[in-house]
Image (cartoon, rainbow, N blue to C red; front, top):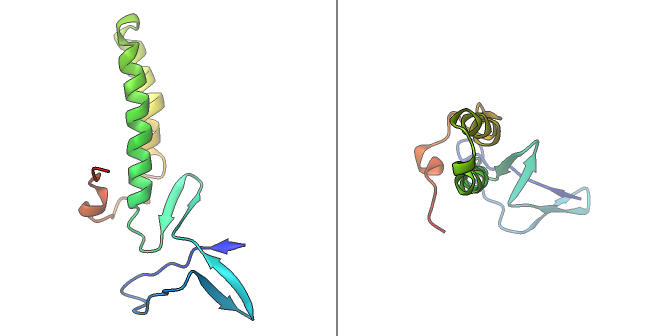
Length: 109
């Protein structure tokens, strides 16, 4: 069984260096990030992985809509963008509302 150990800098100053945690004599694997209900949480709670995956999924949908835009009406395109892009951004947006701007800026990778 694997767990994510959250490391909030203001709460916990020590960083866990090893890849496991010993609990009652049992080794518990630590993960760098976990996904729960579509939200990716990392150890520092920067949400960088979540934002990177979200933007990737949105651009994927937009690229496919771009390839068929000539055969669709404007109303249909608006409906599809709302269903495929805006709904993804709106889902769990309260989680990332207070994220530092540096984490919200997509990196070129």
